[in-house]
Amino acid sequence: MHELIRDAENDSKSTAGDKHETGRAMMQIAREQLGKQLLEAEMKRSALSRIEGQLIHERIKEGSIVTTNENIIFIAAPIGKIKFDGKDIFVISAQSPLGKTLLRKGAGENVSFNQRNITILQVQ
Image 1 (cartoon, rainbow, N blue to C red):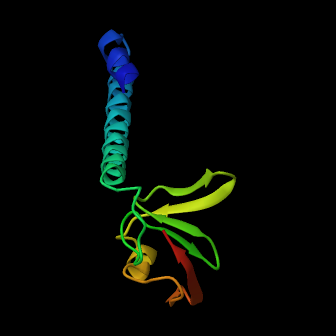
Image 2 (image 1 turned 180 degrees about the vertical axis):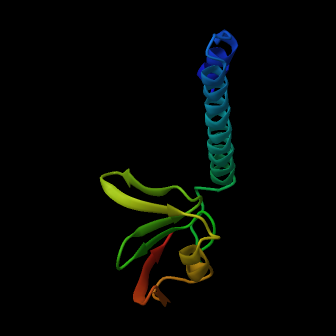
């Protein structure tokens, strides 16, 4: 974003006025897109900072690490798949469809999601 601002400030009016205006408009669009991405990243970071990572959960809630018969899920923020200690972890929000399905469930319970039966093996 800083580069776009610097480029806009350094961009001098050329004889090709339309080309200049198009370039400035494209920089403004790029700046708006970066602003949206920054806001989204800040919201995810805020969601992650509210989670108390040292607690052990008996029931799934925000901050839970859920091991199922299919994968490992961290209920936190909508980040997606990450690698941790050589394992794939799916980081999802509690507001996601799967997150809502898992909330308040415990180890040993089964849920149905997208026509799949998921067994909750462990909740941390």
